[in-house]
Length: 208
Image 1 (cartoon, rainbow, N blue to C red):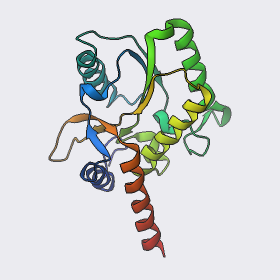
Image 2: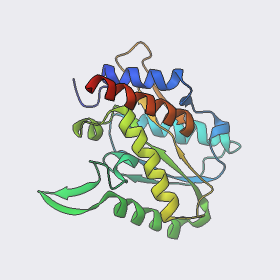
Image 3: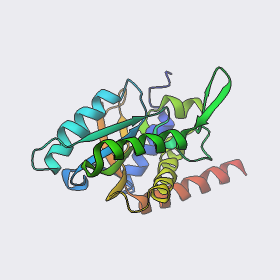
């Protein structure tokens, strides 16, 4: 199966998150007013649909029909690469370590703030499933989405009080399954963490 095709395991995980209220289809009321910095994975299978749905549909509906200022930060693994504990964190070239993903993302956010100021008042963290970088690092959808929340904590610590909101908005590619479309969701932290803890306990029980 290609890395960019959602596995049955991840499909089941996504369906569980939806059923338990952790993943909800994004609505204009979920999207904050004002421009935003989008941190996502540069996966070519997902980027056009993400832009179409998030930037050209949801964002204008949330901002009285206006398309707001945006600044994209694309990095393999998306927000899941930011935490130091992530296996996607190290950026290397020809076997040589170049930098950590956090340093790269922070530098791009600094550029966005210098260039666009208060026109980008929010951050949208866009992990996606299926994600080739996550799959190549043996990370499930559970793991990747959990890393996105750790990334949110890193950003809040690095840029205290500089953004009105930082939200995790996963993009799901259901191609190959009965629900064959791309959808952007809002990931609710408390319900997700409760579901994630149950997932971890199930894994531990199976491994015991």
